[in-house]
Length: 386
Image (tube, rainbow, N blue to C red):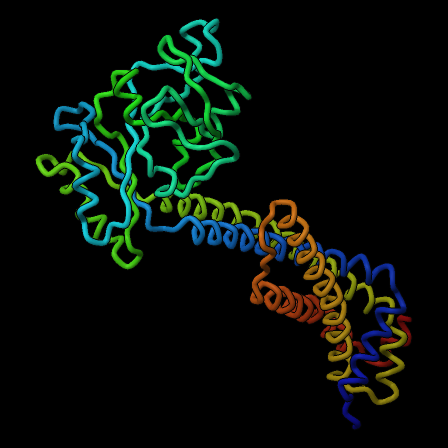
């Protein structure tokens, strides 16, 4: 018996699909939707992660933040006013700066606003090198005049206050000299109104104690610096100091995104399963409708193995058609969404290969039972039934 060559199998499988094009397209569409969903979910997640990695690379992951914790009695601790100077003496530390919260101070856009309507904006005394240390930049304007009543607005603060030339703080007008862009690694600055360190002491009774210290270290020594920051900032009570790494918060957000991605992948898998059932249904009906063809081929000498291989090949072609369309559609959706978010378009190679591999597996499984059923038909039974 002559063995069917691969080109012959492909030609036979293609003939089966071409003879019922609408049914083939609808079945392939079910596979395509599942593959497109899974490819797009993985691609969008990978693109988001690439954008986060790009942002971290630009901002740096070597920023550490020192804040006061609590005393043994549960009260809020206080950092010594010498904390910044002591931290700067640590060898691998490249820069250190601080902000200090000015107590009982509210910000208003005019002097006509009732005292209780503060808008939730904090007034922070800021040292001159704050922006370079936290990686902040201006949307417009410049830094404060350290000894004069001037302010710089965070991005959220500027949005709430509006485009004002000056703000009203503690019975005095303060000139707005600049507005900051959002600061990813120090989001607390977005809703802050920053004043000069000296001006805060002169006009707002600021006591000079820092409430947040920001420090940059050499990348290779971040962990070592982190371990000594607490005793350096407050030697007498190191247990009353909290040290954090802002980029860890972004990593936590990424972990949350990964959980959501897993959920969406589950939905894509369900869509893929539905598509596989559609392929199986199509192949079963095809066997029933083509019993005369099967009987004729068996009468002409086709073996059960050749009949079985023919229908499995047809199922594989149908699934591969849907898989190729799904991978392409998923890639296009990823690219479109990433473009709207200004992200780099990233679709992992394993996702593309996995999509194709999933279609092959689905095609083999979905076509196996119909192929076995077709191969078991006796020539005379198939011809008489037809």
